[in-house]
Length: 170
Ligand code: FEO
Image 1 (tube, rainbow, N blue to C red):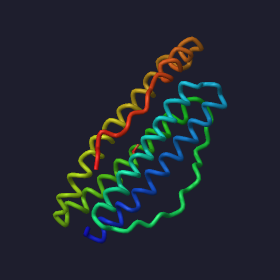
Image 2 (tube, helix red, strand yellow; image 1 turned 60 degrees about the horizontal axis):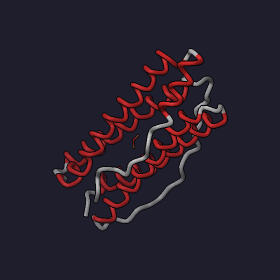
Image 3 (cartoon, rainbow, N blue to C red; image 1 turned 120 degrees about the horizontal axis):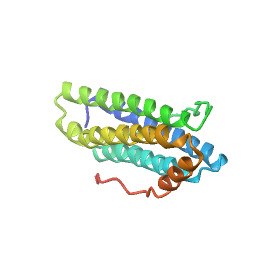
Image 4 (tube, helix red, strand yellow; image 1 turned 180 degrees about the vertical axis):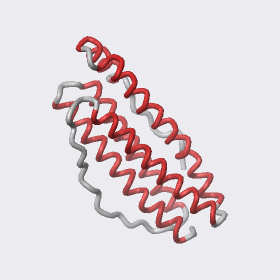
């Protein structure tokens, strides 16, 4: 059985991860309409990873004999004004997710919930990777994306991203 506050925050994180999946799916859809299938692929893979994050939270709660309350997922509402906008919005979003994970970690730390801290260690590392990947993508876009040939090549590169199941197994 988990501390009530830790449990509540983990339950809320399921919703946040599913919202992340929804947001990245919306970005994938935008790029698909713009015929940038590589960018679409990158965000589609990202959406799959976010769903995985939600399922890891779900499994952790269930493994600890906790019930789960699923709540409504908000509509993605980022306006895509140009090709760069989803990239910067994604990075901003990852910063908020990092803060949210850190907040759960702090709650677990406060009640000496070492099991949840150990579980969250994977997410702490994952957030560092996600921030870097998205930041790197913005830099590449700024370097190459405003030139038609550069955009074409970058789109090709992003099309090679492959989905991989999470390294964390519960
Ligand atoms: Fe599940 Fe991108 O954080």
